[in-house]
Length: 379
Ligand SMILES: [Zn+2]
Image 1 (spheres, rainbow, N blue to C red):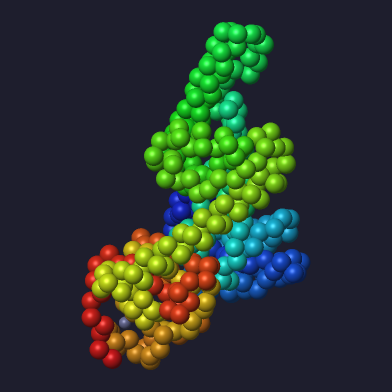
Image 2 (image 1 turned 90 degrees about the vertical axis):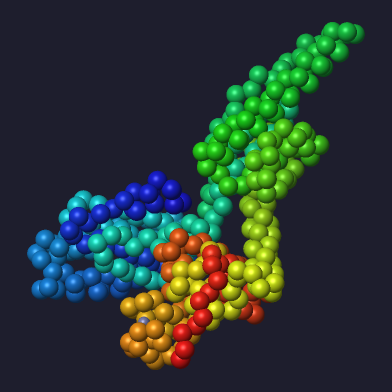
């Protein structure tokens, strides 16, 4: 699981004159033992760099320490990540390992700061889901994120658990009191959800319990929380099988994400059809990315597309030899969509990989824009 605090710590890493080594390596699920040699292969370039006479001695020693530290970390057992990212600057005593829930492209970057874009792109695609199991007197909270469910405690409740068995008016009074306490309990649950949402502890909510009691809680939710309800599912409030709760909640999250992807694609395509601020198709999206015009980029699945990039001004295209802006020769890349994704993140835009079957398949990419695209440079 990638914790936000870890990402913040990595974002704050500074070589302070030394280089930071960032390495991303995928784990082959069919051959986990191949991981150390995959890492070793990626580190080859860095080993060459540790002998580079253009670097000063301290920088070379730090890089050598980075390689040793990563090789050492690789031998530690990783349970089931899809990829692992290492960030190291041994000369400054900095080292972080992050296990990623999704594969990334093999990558190695040596720079003054850590290379976090693949990490940020992976995180962008996960919603933090608060899972609530509730009945009229109890509530349990978990957060489901990157396939892991973590307990978030229970709100304190003052509900009546043992109504005294009485007759006549006394029973009516007890029932009214129970009703009152149930309302107070739902209010407490709703309040705690609103507070945690304000602290950005979650993005969406899945609510479960007895089917007939779920609407009672929904009625008590303030609008800002109700807008985040991704779905509900029936479960016995005392269900002890957390795996079962997790699986049902995951289904709610998956359904929500599919629906959200469909909605985003439909909105972008409609906006474009109406002549609004949107781009459809790879060529226009690449131009939008080069001019920092992208607000939200939608990319179909994990399709790769070869293309060219200008190192000087960020021009990107699917083909060409010379940059139409500056005239310099273009660098070839096996996947220009990856360059586009990173350009969008660099300029503060968002990226959504659309895994659902939508009309985006025909266009590969679409984007909503911050401003109209300038005319394409001639050539
Ligand atoms: Zn150029």
